[in-house]
Structure formats: C-alpha cells, structure tokens
Length: 509
Image (tube, rainbow, N blue to C red; front, side, top):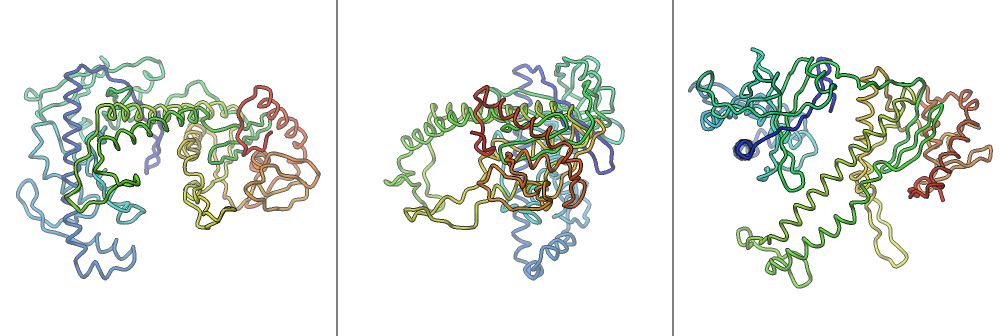
C-alpha cells in the first residue's frame, strides 16, 4: 500500500491484490507483457536513430550548456505522418512527442489488445529514461530484457472507462482483460478473479478508481500475478493514532536512534537482511565457477575476461545448473527486499504512538554511496579501499524508511520535518551551548558536564528539541535530560541483557 500526492494536491493511494489465474490466462498475460517489451525496445531504437542524427547537426553541437540543449530539443521539429495519413509538425524529444510518435505501433498490434492508453504508458516509461540521459544523471539508453517488462497501468478515460480493461464485474471480484481490442460484441474478454480478504481492502473500493494496473512478480521460481488499483482520496485508517509531542530521529546508513518524551530507541535498520548475505555469496561463487567451466574461451589464464573484437565473441553457454542458481539468487534478492520493507513498516507503525511531530536529519544518502575521493595507503603501502556505505545503504534502505514513515504520519494528520544537516545535531553540546566537531570513528561523545553518551542517541535528543536554524530549546533539554539519561541506559541494558548483536556504530560494548 502506497500513498502519493498528485500535482493538483489531491491524495491517492494504491492497493495491490493477488490474481487467481489459470495456466491459459497466465500465458495470455505473459504474451502481452512480452509484446509490450518488444514495443518498448523497438521504440527506443527508433528514437536513438533520430537522436544520433540530431547530434550531428551543427546547431546541436553549438549548444554548450544544459539549458541551451533543452531549448534546442524543445523547439526541434520534424514532419510526421499520423495514423490518419495527415502531415504535421512533431517535436520528437518531448514527452508529448514520444506519446504521439509511438502511435505507429497502434495499427500493428491493435488485434492483440495493445491500445492507445497502453502505448502511452510505454511512451512515458521510455521518456523517463530519455529525460535522465538528456537532462539528468543518466549515461545511456538501456533496453529491457525478456523478463524485465513486468507491469503496465491504464488510466481512466474521459468517459470514465479503462481502455482495454473491463470493470463491469468488480462487484464479483473479477477484472476483465480485452484480448483483441474489439468493442461491444466484437470484444474478446477474459475475466480473472482476485482476492479481497480484509475489511480494510473492501473499504478502499468506496473511493473512486483512477487507474488499474497488472503486474507479475517472480516468486519461488514461478510468476505470480497481481492487480493494482489507484484510488483518489484518503486511504482508510487502520485504527492507528498518533501520540503527542516531538520525536527526534537520527538515521545512518544502517542504524537508527530515536528520542521522544517516553522512549529512547537504538537499533539496526532491517536486521533480517544481513542473514541472507552469506547465502548470496555462496550462490554467486557457484554461478562464477559454472560459467568458467562451460565457457573456457571467454576467460584468460589469469582468470580475467578475454577481450574480443565486435562480432567475434563466442556465445555464452549457461548450463541448467547455472540457471537454477540464478533462480535461487533472484529469490534471495526478493526475500531480502520483502524483509527490508516489512521491517520498515513495523518500525514506522511502532513510532506512531511516540508523537505527532517528527524531526529527522536530511542526510545526503546519495553522497554516502559514492566512493571517497581521497586516496590513502595502509602500512604496507597498498591503496586502501575507497568504498564507503554503498552496500549498507542497499541492504538497509534508510531513505525508504523515511518515506514510509512520512506517508504514515501525514495520513494521520501529523508532520515530519527534514532538518538541514547544517544544524549539526551530533556536534551540539547543550550543557555549554557550543558545537564541537567529532571524527566519524568517535561513537561515544563526552559532554562538558562529564557524561558520555552514544553519538546517535544524543543527536536524536538534540533533533527532538530543534526549533530553528541551529537553534535548540536548551531550557527544555535541561529539564528532560535526567529522564533521557535513564532511558538511554535502559536501552543499552536491553541490548546487553538479550545478548543482541549491536552495530559498533553505537559504541556499545
């Protein structure tokens, strides 16, 4: 369940339900997704050819800045003949141009149920890739593999219908999929039942449906099929209520520390994901050994991949055992993703009772993922690894947790503020109202009053009492400080008592 806010300020949320498909229906859905994947790749090839032609133009080469390139591409036009045979000017390298130009596939695949709404969805996905390459951080246009196009969404039309999807049997918990693009008596439709298990899911259908999507997920070696409904309005409340007061959250690449009036909490984000790393490593080794054994021409004697000229590389041979290893590895990645998301949801639900005003430091997560620019050497003179927190962020997903918490808090009428890192929450010492910079390896901080605290917990305590730009409510902090010390010691004892594996980032022995 996700909640989003549109540009017009209206809220909408998504409900995902499992489909009960037969083998024949699964084959039909797989064929449609395969056709969509082919359309996407062919469309991207056409646009790449056009862009390679544009890059050779003198006017484009003279564009030195990003804004000049954007202006040129937004004004560049071509003569295009639409499906009715009429010529008109088309701006190909805009989102509207993509949605117009993709209509060339409408006549080819209309008998397979590929309609204009579905083509516009494909064009939007294609444009999002081009937008990143032309104006963002994207490096190149990639093509989708056979099993990578796994979903599509149909928005509501002006006549309150969904082109290609029949909703006449929603009361019977069935969704219809048009197979041939026909209408009325000429339409060939299959009806697929879906499951509704809870009162919460039934209450969602009291809202207006704005879009319907179909998707598949590879689970335990088989494709499972789902339907997604996008509703407009506020999502139903699951008997959850916000507490009262401020809550400070200090989040790191793999840890979280929370401070409120009644609770101090420190733990590792999504602890279960680490248990899968060993299994993943073993499977990756098996895959590597299998590929080296069945493809001796692809590798040199020293183990590195052999280079070939374009068109001369022999085809990679993947054994059946290796294919099974890939399936198992894919399942491990899926489990890790599910564990991570469920853990974030459970933790965010637990935090709702602590307060209604949440303050979290807006840490530069993308910067944490980059390699260090500084080159250092160890005692033997070898270069140290420049890797930083990329793997921790991939496993524990701190940004995902903040997004989930923010959606839940705002849906219940609370607020979540992302404080600027310039407030230096981990450097502020409220006992003498000074800022002291600490090295990253310092996980325990000494205050001027002689007390020592975990760096993350005192940072969360400071964020809880942040009232402005580098301004803290020092008087309130002094009143609540003794209670904070007791709660912090209780949290440390909790970890020590149950002999839990605690990250060294907390500085707890």
